[in-house]
Length: 478
Image (cartoon, rainbow, N blue to C red):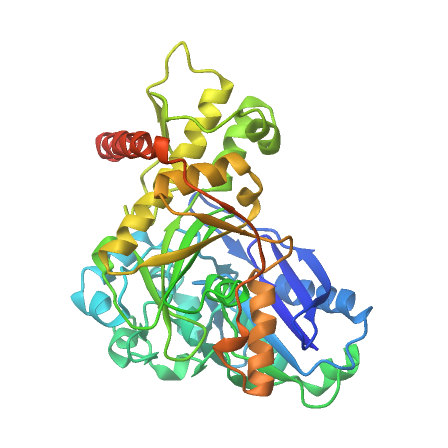
């Protein structure tokens, strides 16, 4: 059996998977985010350990004596700062923290960063956070000995080893993403060296073994391997079988992700597409990322005093976009705008705009932002032959029809089940233990396929054009 642990922003999830890839048990533990100042987002690494203990307690009720491996998935970009004794120096600065926007712009102004990392230096990435700490918390920077990503701090607790893997490391702005190795030049530009970095392994490789005290505590056998694992989206890609060129998924969670696998390295930072290593050797992936997907729908639901499921349930058959346009930039945007300051807006409101019309506008706005991601990926040469829909938003049939029609591509809906980061991490643990490769990362069984509405494709094109015109007119005003 194999365990997958997924350290998310709002909670830690664990699954227990059999060698035939059946989920036997799962457990979750909540996590809170601290926002002490505007634009800040932090968590205590001690809370991650407590959550992992609670999850392993829950899984242990099903018996862990046959577990051979543990895999890790986690939120990316977080700066977990340790001293020479591996003591945490301050709360972790998370992926959605924008305090380092000036430092990010400064680093991005050096062409070396885009050339070697393959990506824009976004404010949420790890490297600019170190510059911010140096300038604003010099006493912390002086004691800094090691930087770990969130899931790799869990690994340190599990194994006693400082190790990272390629997919998560690619989101730091310190990795030479094509070479799949730390860049000494990028590190030096932020005052660091390899001494502060964890050792790198592939996501399907062994990164260490479970510490004896933890093995005994939860009744695991001797020599349980811990796989490299993956950043949350790369691990989810392994979980849904998106590991080969042409395969893609759209994730409608708090944020929105359009994720496509590639068998080559083809960056284009100017598009604001993320080009990262995948969690499997010799494989890369690209992502268009929007910061508010279901988050935008939930915001609107709170505004009108209803829940999201009620609002989407009120919608009838898919129809052409109306005059009302919604920009879903509630907290800035990544692809394609790369702006921490842009904000959302309703435009084209009129007397005829009712609750259902505004709900449709919100769903259309998020969908058109995902279409922007599709266009950005296509500009790099990435193709999408198969598109899977995952995440909470995929429970809305109206939204799935909207995405299929606006992107003019069939959307596959998996059978009920969790194929996310925790399941992908468990698959990576199986690979690390047995030596299996990508062939075990199969696509899930498909419950149904949502086809585009051909009679509405032209109307969706026109709606997207109005969305882009509104975006262009308002992005510097909001």
